[in-house]
Length: 329
Image (tube, rainbow, N blue to C red; front, side, top):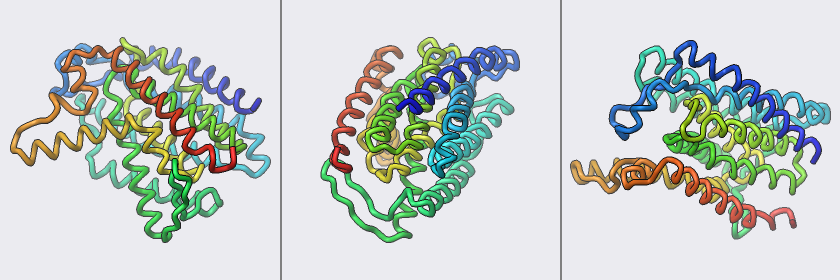
């Protein structure tokens, strides 16, 4: 438990220090966000707000995972380093996307196909690594009912890649309002921290607590009105980190309830596109994803933050109760 608290504290402290230097630097080099022209018109006032701010918690989590997690590595436990490397690879994809956007001075970076291919390759490599080191089994644990279903290795690999890529992009979709994805992800990080502590999987707990500490600090910079955006650099790192935690604990399906906000946001986007094409121009939502629809209905960004974060917290509690019986807790 001391190691977990130390990882949390180091990540928070380093993230705060990184933010104190990073945000002024991003302003200085004019690394400002370009706002989509087809988004809510009132978001245009955010044009120029520094982006790639997610680097501050990436730095904090990295220092905590490597530094505090050194004791775990000496014992031959490398789970926290695997998860960190996986999340950083996704952050690298996001960084390339952010860099392209800044270079082109528009809200279009890498192509969808380029991002998809990079994400699939990283996902498959990570799953194979976890499988090799014994973190993962080709058995699908089903929360709430406590049943484990064996499936073939090839099917599990394809399933895993799909879940990871879907999760990463769902987290990215949720990042559309000041502080929203940060607030929603804090209960998710808390959930994984508590599960890892309860199951005494210390290497996973080190990474999860570092994620929690970094996000809490970042929220001070990202809460409405945001001083900095995390960018795809931060959002893809978060998606990778959450996916990594679920797979390292060998329960990927828990991503559905614990990440319910990401799921609903993504479904709203899919439904909107499908219905628009089916009806040749009609819409179910005023604007997709869901947080933009609610904005169009009069919700403030702060209301969105508090409601969505509360929903995320409630489902984190439900998800924790759903997996308690797996190790006889």
